Image (cartoon, rainbow, N blue to C red; front, top):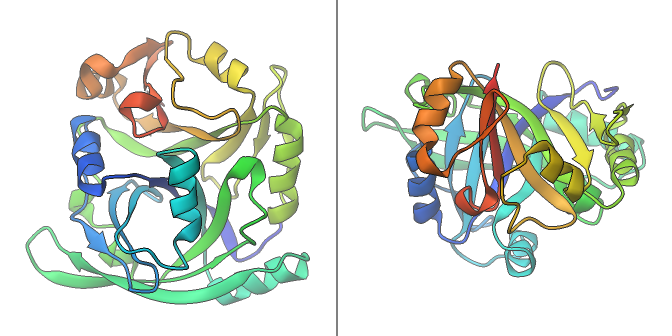
Length: 285
């Protein structure tokens, strides 16, 4: 990827209807979940994070309706729970936004904000961020993208929160379904000045940068073929569909997810109905 200040996928944002209930659900799937966080009044949202080595998953809930969270509320109303946004890591949010504008896209921000953090020992800290986003209307397959600069990384990547019973170590792939995977992959490619890698099965890969997770666009039918026996109920025809997660111990992952897991090859998958609208695939890393 040619953008110098963007270094790959940072985290996946999963919008949920009931934040605390969602956190309990992901704990049942073997994830260690952070204490609940509350964003600024401007954002009007709260979250739980699930931290890995260099990336993470964010469970996001709307606490107070604001102008900023209107797109997330519209997403919930139209689709229900699921992957609403993907964040890239920005080494410098202001410089990254400038690069995106030079590509011809009207970047929004940067916006600086923070949230209190409760540490595992009961102490308090603060996580501070600078974010910018691509235009809301420029969402490949309906998936919005933005970039996040972590100003207080130690307040987010807390060692005690990175150990999971399911042994997940990182995000490997973001799965996106589309009736026209090539067209939507090209849309993302243009937004990030990236690359395209067409696959023999008809899917299209867009690397996110460095060694971070990649985007994979495919039809809903192909997704079903890749995960036989996994119900896709709740997934749209077009949009963020799933996350492929690297694990250090596939047997431990299968044990952690329990009865909702479906064996797929040498890994295990959790259907969207059990993953707050997200298909989760656990594979050896």
